[in-house]
Amino acid sequence: MPADSTVNFNVLHRTCKLVVLLCFLHISVTLIFYVRSLDIRFAFVQNQQSNTPADVRSTNLTTKVTLKDILTPKGPVTAAQQEEAKDEVQVKVEESPKKLEKCPETSPLLVGPLRVEFSSPVSLEQTRKENPNVEAGGRFRPGDCEALQKVALIIPFRNRDEHLKYWLYYLHPILQRQQLDYGVYVINQDGDEIFNRAKLLNVGYAEALKEYDYDCFVFSDVDLIPMDDRNTYKCFSQPRHLSVSMDKFGFRLPYNQYFGGVSSMSKQQYLKINGFPNNYWGWGGEDDDIYNRVASKGMSISRPDGTVGKCRMIRHDRDKQNEPNPQRFDRIAHTRETMHKDGINSLSYKVMKIEKEPLYTKITVDVGKP
Ligand code: BGC
View (cartoon, protein in one colour):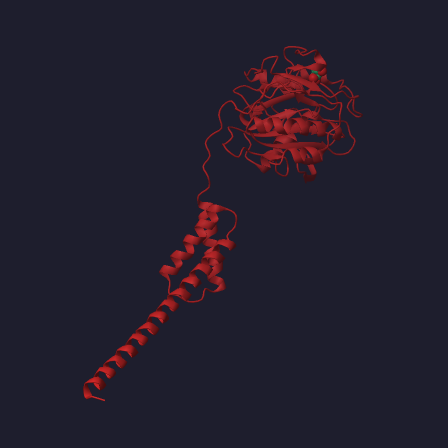
């Protein structure tokens, strides 16, 4: 073989080896990058799957991990670090609660006149299902705006479970449409001593305030249902009488000073009259005493008009241990003298039981006897 061709062959041989080496290097580098990209994609998918359904939470979690990755040296994440990261995410979520706008003065959800009847029975289960946004203890607040008032609904009670079912069935949807931040308190008189409605209302006021910063109190008999949701169960600049045209009285006021059935008072109005009397045992007179208290403090009664204020009463026989109180006329005649020492400032009672039912809070109390 000539020397020239030997040199050429050697050059070719070396060039080929170099090319093969370069190819090998190229393939290796490509492989390394490919494997690494697979790793990242796998981690991303895993991260997506472990996120909670809440979008905000998942976004924060992803951001947090990425930042931590950048700022801290690489290495396996310990359980403690993971816990810490979770806490940080939690704090972030709590720090930025959605600030709601105030609800409008008149709720846009109101529908006006309602059909109210008591011929077919209603169940608590059905009412609970139809009001999924009512929370344990009968608490609700609007989800899309901040309620203008925090209202405690106080119901004096004993052995009227059938009436309570109707009350809850009709009132929960109405109160939600009225966009109130509210809670329902059923104040159940323990034992079988003579009934004391006004004292139970005082207990309701005191007990509700232990739970939440209510600024308005609606006092409602368990057997009265409004027939129009424009009759808002809230407080006004003057104490409000809400049950102004009851079917029982031919849809009119029985007398001008009538303040029975359903009424509302702000905390200030209630305190101004020293709450309600504690010594009206049996039926009648306590609402007239409350009227006298309001009038004696220079306040007037505000009322909805006769159409909006229509309501139905569930017919029933007179309760046992709630006979007409023969002392009521004498007591009403002396409200101005007695009201400063008999009221919320002299209230004493014993709570026997507090039950958080799905649609209401039931507080059983021993209010003593005459
Ligand atoms: C009683 C009130 C009662 C009203 C209407 C009055 O005689 O004193 O307590 O609400 O009648 O029945």
